[in-house]
Amino acid sequence: MEITNKTRRPIKIPLPDGKKLFLGPGKSAQVNPKAAKHPPVMEHVEAGDLEIGDAGGKKGSTAGDGSSSSSGSQNSAPTGNIRRTGDR
Image (cartoon, rainbow, N blue to C red; front, side):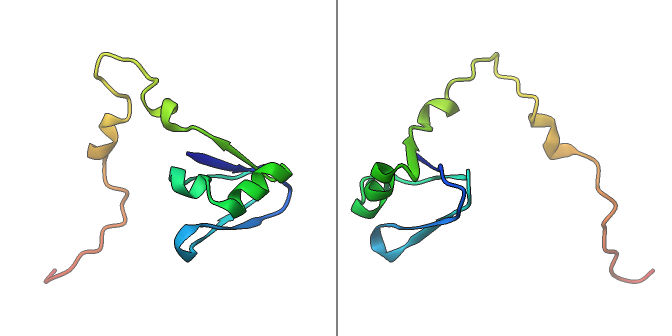
């Protein structure tokens, strides 16, 4: 599930198990469904500070023939920041 901050100020959201989520203005984050139903989170949603959406549909929505444009990024050329060690 995806939580989005709809305010113009950062929000600190208490989550289950004593964790906290810090969201900047207009930013979003992924949380599990248990955290989305947590009472303090629901208070922020009812106040209009947060919006909860389902981000699960975005991952599988791309259709293709199995090729990917990002697959070539793994074998890219070195950046030039190589630290040489040993005898020279």
